[in-house]
Amino acid sequence: MLRSLVPRRERSLRPTGDRFTGMFGQLEQEMRDLMENFWGDGGQLATTNFVPSVDVVENEKEFEVTVDLPGLKPEEVKVEFQDGALWITGERKEEKEEKEKTYHRIERSYGEFRRVLPLGSMVKEGEIEAKFTNGVLKVSVPKSEEVRTKRIEVKS
Image (cartoon, rainbow, N blue to C red; front, side, top):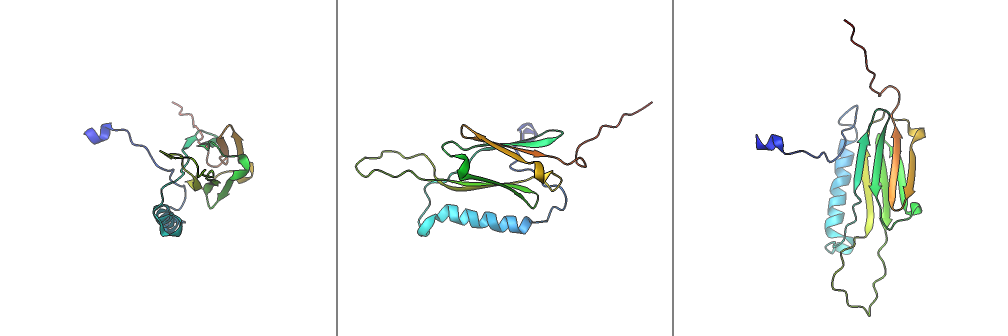
């Protein structure tokens, strides 16, 4: 009973169409990412990991994707749509550490990031728009006419 009262947060959108298309490729990539994130470069334990926050909102006409990318420039971000998924990649480069300073705490994260959002194949790929303002990326992914919900009037 208590479990049903706790709100659930979905981690990603479920793709439409064949559920298994690309599933094993995505699993393989996630396992590779997991190992890279754990071991980092050169076999050392990774201490930093930059994973931008993403919001995905769906309305009748489109998906609206918002990504927080503070400190990045538009040319450091790449947006692609392939195999029914929106790919957002980039890199936050590490600032050069000054040797004469004594660092007591370093909490800012750096490194490459990749967010893959399965949206299905029923989108208008040619009309996807991405805008980057003040460290926030907004991507508009219009749905094709076939996917949109059509209300049918029930007559008595």
